[in-house]
Image (tube, rainbow, N blue to C red):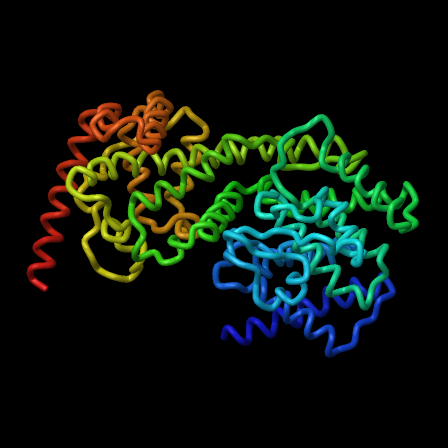
Length: 453
């Protein structure tokens, strides 16, 4: 089945790439095209790739612009945070330019003067030889652009390759706001590269290239502006699993592991704004369209942060109670359908009174989250349905007006600024007592099961 899927992906990749290259007047032989597409699909099919995979690339395939299509196919080839290394089949393209020292990648010295592609790529990304690449935020995009240019150099002229590398540069996400926007800064860098290497770009071609990069970048982060919040939170879960390898085996990670993994995306969402996510240059996208997208981004970020907060609050109190007698417990131990969806084991939830009526919430975010957590498709953005039901139980027992204060205490707890006792004191006493009793009964039941077995 896996081989069949891979063959289908390679076939689809060949259709997309060959069509785009043909529009640019480039024709690649069947054998060479097959090799390029197998490389793309194999790299994007890494076992840790949950979101940044070949299916993600297909979101760009309906574009008419061949520059956008080709840049899209290559822009995520390198993803060091996920793959943990440069994929083996790409090392041949990058080894002349990189050296590894103390776990970091460094750009070699005295190479760019003999290699125009490297010199152009350095100029576009604002890099210099001898620089520690691991500390550069756009290292994945830089290396992906360099690999793309090296692979396609036999088929495309330097000017077109420069245009493609420029477009890929703009897919560097979430950059801090400066006086000039990323497209404006890149316009200047492309101008300097054009002059230094005599590439022959007109000002219109430079502007068109930056505009194409903005289009690709906004499609790349279009999930943030999704009209369906469920799509946004599903993508968040995929990225979360992709960036935390321990989440890829549901049987073993603990309550503490899972809760700590939620803190990073929660912090990121707290720091983001539409201006850091969506790019705009000249009239791309048009002002009215940009405002619609920005409003969706604000809504999804706010609701997404609240969704993560509800989980963090719910599991923090559980971890504080567990910490009284052990370091932590596997999430699958408490909610067996996390790692064993069809197993008939006791669940912590079974020991809680779940018939507490819920008043209709006035907080629109709370109402949306409660509806979401009772959907059948829960496991596409949570480890299990039972965990979702536990979060619902918690939201039924915590007064909405106190959620903000409790969330703040949870952040202090995970920063180790307060202990279990102070955290538990921030929750309603009746709720703490319910959870204590349920945990005691659950653990007693588990002990009997273990003794019988």
